[in-house]
Image 1 (cartoon, rainbow, N blue to C red):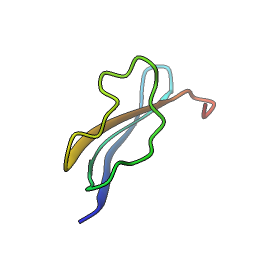
Image 2: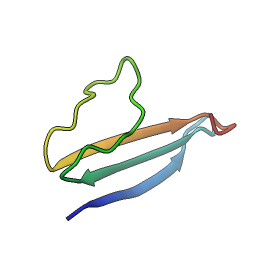
Image 3: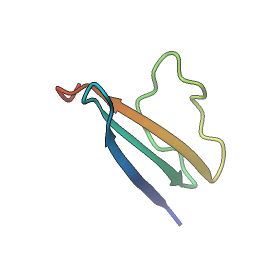
Image 4: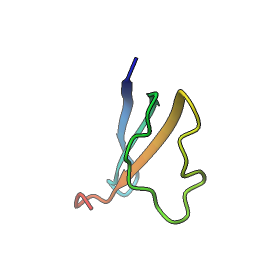
Length: 58
């Protein structure tokens, strides 16, 4: 089963958009990964993700 879930979308104290979710996926999702990411590899059936966008959408 290929499912992506984003149960939380919030604004932080600087009005940045933060999305937290998890992926149940047999194949790697093609998310852009930052240079200093804690872990940049797909590690099996379930992974979590955190996306932070500035308040101007970048």
